[in-house]
Length: 104
Image 1 (cartoon, rainbow, N blue to C red):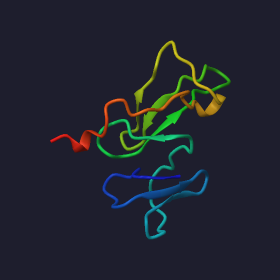
Image 2 (image 1 turned 135 degrees about the vertical axis):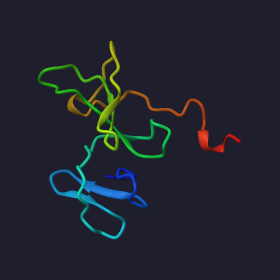
Image 3 (image 1 turned 180 degrees about the vertical axis):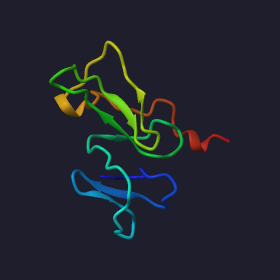
Image 4 (image 1 turned 90 degrees about the vertical axis):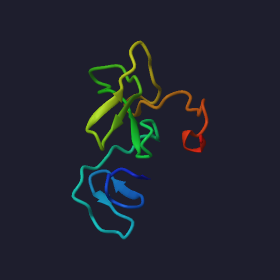
């Protein structure tokens, strides 16, 4: 996957589960590897967040949104379900309000 996942590292990064996270020049970074589920821009700071399923053996997948740069969940929806089991992909992803960066 690719995205702006490591604050302070210019450009986008690329990561592979169980391998590592790399900068745009191919250097391995000393940073935690994000999940490889669906990426989303949720926080408003232009970094990449990941939608994630719950532990499907213990919980129902709810489509939580994790912000790895802040090491926390930004959204843990209650009373909802997601599809694809462990991935927790939402059934719909849409930009309802437009690009906030173009408001001036």
